[in-house]
Amino acid sequence: MSYVGWALVGMVGYSFTALLVKLAMRDGRFSSFFVLAVSASFVVATAMIVVLIRGDLSRLSARDLLSPSAGFVYASGIALSVAVTSYFRALAMGPASIVVPIYGTFIVGGALLGILFLGEPVSARKLLGIALAMASIFLLAGSSGGR
Image 1 (cartoon, helix red, strand yellow):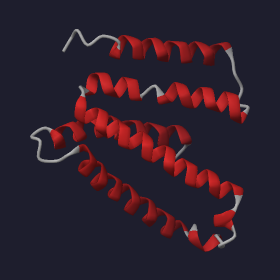
Image 2 (cartoon, rainbow, N blue to C red; image 1 turned 90 degrees about the horizontal axis):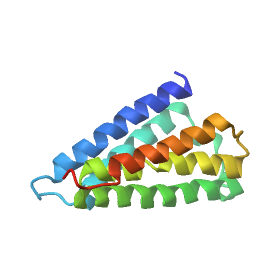
Image 3 (tube, rainbow, N blue to C red; image 1 turned 120 degrees about the horizontal axis):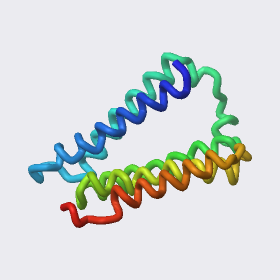
Image 4 (cartoon, one colour; image 1 turned 120 degrees about the vertical axis):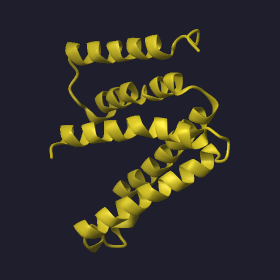
């Protein structure tokens, strides 16, 4: 499967995540942090199964785990932990129809960081896409008058 296919599968999964988190917390039995802990456990188990099947661990040495690249691995774990913990908490506190679009702004942030730090090409079309993404998020989440 191409990277576009994987991105589409991820989009579908994340789309259902917001709905399922809200449904899990609906009756007040489970906190956002409990739902996150269970959900994250599934992510860790799945990732470890894939790593083991692919043989990724057999290609690593102890020195690899102390390399500059490993620092980015650990930093990405911290960033993801902050992002997902905040997302689940926001879903517990507010309507998905507002929380999800605001959280979705990470698309714009990721695109801008790719341009600024990874030297990815910028074009008028890409800049227009970023602007339209921001406009759509403003239109979706900018007013809570519909609640």
